[in-house]
Image (cartoon, rainbow over all chains, first blue to last red; front, side):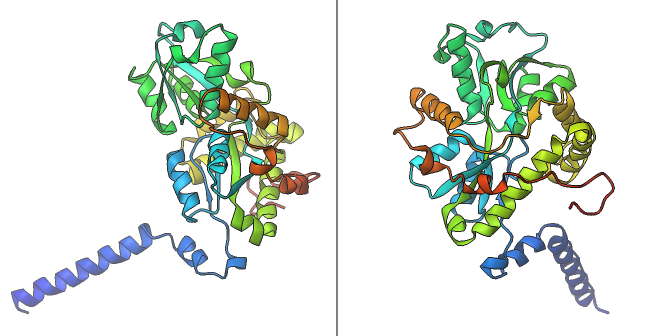
Length: 52
Length: 279
């Protein structure tokens, strides 16, 4: 394998890992999916701050 | 979870959030400005206090004269309680230097002596007490019986289009409140609530929330949570008097009581630590 191919492969692997980590850790799938439901089936989003 | 009330206001207005817990005067002021929301229920009663440094010079309310006091918002009951306490102590609140600060920042600011006191809801008074540098100068209940801080507001379009969902939400809060005040099980329920709310909702040390909910057990109360006209007339009156509300506003214009009425007679959740589901 040439150096160029090796570097390209590493970049692809690195990008895939970072993308997967981002999609797992930073994206709230429950909220995203909820927003796509028909309105009558959607859960209400309730905002709060950590104070009484 | 948000870190400040202004962000909640924006999220609500942009429909990112359909409902929110926010300080009562902010909800009233938004409605008075024409924002289509209504208060449908309360979050709790009491649970706010004015805290000073334990080893500091402030021993009485009069000692706050000329000092810096942090409040969560100029549209908050924590600000109004300072006006009420000042009046009862023969002072003017103008003699205090009030600064707005995000609630999570106040305990650290007091520890660092960046402020002299703060007027804030739990668990921040508990945080300062637990850490050993703060002392409660007075609790809101000392000057304001049946004190209210956070209320549940819902967008008017959601109330109009999905009243059943709003009722379900209010019923759930009513039943949770009754569960937290459930007779002989009150202490156990509050201990468990402190654990799961600390871990999964507030991201705070459960020991802190245990302090706030149990020291003493009625430090924060979760019933009655129905919005009552006389409570809000007092808030509106103080808002008008202190210059944060430009016009009189009728109770019916900013409160929709039908969901609280619908939750009357609800029973506490049947739930104990370790159960997988509440019934």
